[in-house]
Image (cartoon, rainbow, N blue to C red):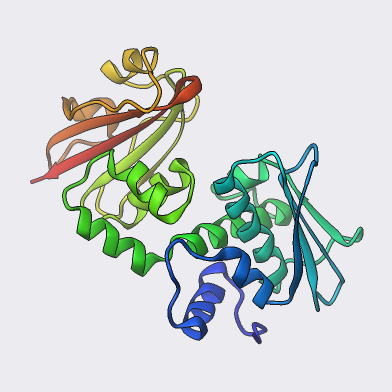
Length: 268
């Protein structure tokens, strides 16, 4: 593939999908990487990082190493992440000849500080990997097939696309046609949130306590149990409730106090 004229993750993905024409689900990320001049993908016992791309300055070929001890879904995301470093033209090979990407790097999605190119590279690699494993067109089809928003769609889509629940929930919120949002938290403390294009602006801040009843539910998290829809006061969650008829909340409780809160707004 000649990618010299494509710079963003989305541009590269569009060109890739145009050439592949059809991609099965779950996406065969290993096969795609090997078809794009990655010589091999190795699993090793590595500490301090989740994945590595070893390549030359001209990125003529490369090798991807993933953490042997990570889950299958984490490995798939890591392969996509390292493939992004290989394919994206602005991602210059480090002087050592190897990218070494940590778990923290794999969690970067927010805009970095101005001029922080290293952080921007990791964010772009994450966007590429999420877009590769969950192609927008196919993911939207699945959302439409599932119907009205529900938090139990997240584990179902996670299984289908072989992606983590967190990555799946982000994509679910970003692509849903309904006004929905997801808020990620641990032990009742907000980590971050994502919204659909039609959802009002969230007022919940990172490192703040979850609002209302959901905070006490976080302390009772039990495996993968999820709650029924509950009506919430929009003022607790939104910067402005103007134009909002009602706000419903549903939660997906995970291990170690992690929780995904799904919000669904009814707009006047």
